[in-house]
Length: 214
Image (cartoon, rainbow, N blue to C red; front, side):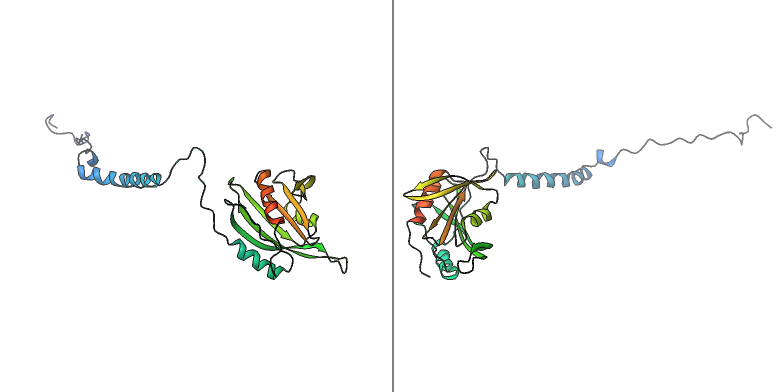
């Protein structure tokens, strides 16, 4: 065999072309479409953040919901059939909520001496101090009414409001409760986050009023 003939068993080296450059590196249109989703996300995020605001002192005071206390208490007086009073509060007090309820075994039937269901009428107020207080009027016994508000509350003293004694209950945790009995038939209870002056104002506003017609 001549030395000039190719060796059929020799390996053949085939040149490999260099890897193609990523199209994103040289095609402006591809780069635009790859970035477009990110741009859209950034715009949406900026819009959401733009609707938010930072209040270093906490959330601002919202508008107090309107509640027609005269109409609600007038209806309660007709339905519940025990003396219900409409507090005459000074300017700046705003009623914001109300409800009727019941307390099973909440009062003692004078005829039978047995516990029977008691009824309640509650209205919530926002005081000028921006604190919430509620007034509950009920035919329940004192201990049952206070227990329905906070079963852990215990009597700790009394407050005199223009000659009317309000027994003060304090729970281990929670808000104080002031309660008194008017005319021997209706138990009142005030509770909330207000200051003592707020409690006094609400107590005076209700105890001086005559019962609404039934």
